[in-house]
Image 1: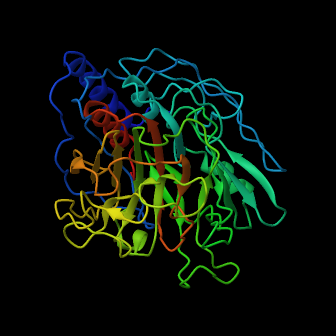
Image 2: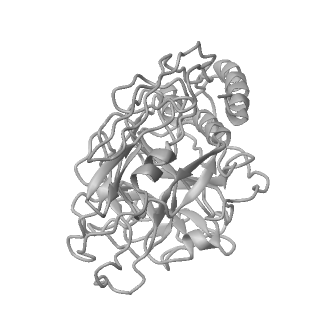
Length: 449
């Protein structure tokens, strides 16, 4: 199988950036470039994609490109009565400056449990070069770290409650959608686990419920509800649906979608710095200007509202009545608990709308009272710094607790909706140069193509 053109383009860009960045030195604070051009058409389900950048308080450090491990993916595995994941291996060639290694092997060779690292460079490889390593990396559509060899996610078959791990294809890093389709033939599966690709074991399963409000267990996402094309391959993402009944006592089966992990490893706590991004969608059918809160990021371990500054997560959507930016939305905002912020306030108009089919959404939370929000088109163009400056009053020193949430607020408020394709959390505030490379990696992945 030929290497997808998008990855070839990324190889050239990555190698060029590696040479240029190697010659740079630390200096004044730099920011990601301004907004990109219009997006190409979205799939029928309107999916999102992209990721943002940041600047460090002391100035952006020049970082080199990420290298790739030169090993092929191993055989996948099946669980709970599902069809075995197909075997196959790849012969790995040498990688350039963080580029794609030449690979042989059959086109249906699988990565997955028991295999070696991939030859493909992902966002986590790039973050590693900048000394801001991934501590959580979640995606049902593609590989995010070359060192990861496990499955991307697990699906559950309701007819017999059996489960199946879904691997990635070794040559492309995209999810093996055929494995899901085969296992789920004749029934509607749900996504039961989103595996952490960082190596920290921060896997996400459905939320067990809030401690004070929205005490119900949330729903798992329907596994085939959000198909899209990624680099020429069909994959399935997570469609977060809202509890639209009002209050927090929905009828059985009407709960919102939500995933969570309270006992984590390596996630930032207190005022420690972190970087977060997710790939989402700005199409109206994706976010729907829904309620609180379609979040991904750092939340309370207590499953309740512990007050201002006890969470730091990316919020995406129409503001949920808590905050807004310029224009009509949607916006990339910061949910810091008891407030959703577009800048130093909850109505900073310099944070403009990003209604692209594929959207970058990034939050850089620094120690010492500053943070940045970045957004842009994940199909073409650069990132735009929507805000970079002081935190809101009452949030100067953060009190982060280090749990992870996907799809709900910190107290399990499940009234938001959105599309989730991939997301990463790191330790430390990533530099602008690293985030430029990460964004190039997202563009090369080929969302909607």
